[in-house]
Image (cartoon, rainbow, N blue to C red; front, side, top):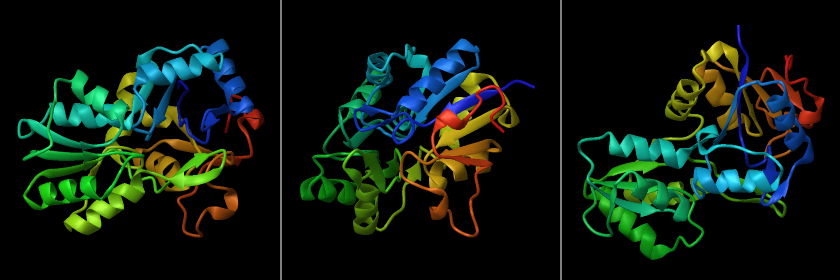
Length: 256
């Protein structure tokens, strides 16, 4: 049986723009051992190309095909839906670019779909437009529902905070593209060409990385460099297969 990895970015490989050295070293070991992996992130604000450029600055060379984002999963979902032609976006340039690259028409009025990601310029007018469109019948999609985003300053509000406000004001819950939901795992496994039991998810959150891996039939390792620590895991789980302080503690060829 083979071995492959899905690895989160924010809180695992870096905090904001600051790399986590043990994670950078771990990725280098995977490359040296020719172990397949994908970076899988709920962060919708950056394209695959931008993420690759960021990684290159850390000394890690990747191709865009090595990265799966919640924006990419959302764009695929929308482009494959015959009922969606016009989309209202609440999000940043990374999400907009990925949707545009799929030929999706983005509008401000009368959309068929509202897609919501992290938007650091979110305001009342955007809340109002999104909520009214959803109440008028537009499909409601969220790239992810992470309530927080790990940064060097601490836990900043994540896309989930914006999604929650739109859900409250529209009276509807979204279809979610990112972890812990299934679509992003299905796409990632398909790209790796591996079965769930061959793949380990490495993440910093028990509520999406660990829970998502469990739901998808993957094993998981939680690393305590981002949002959650072992003490944060609820008594009823979801439980990772292993908790480590940093990725320095892992043997990439025999992690469990």
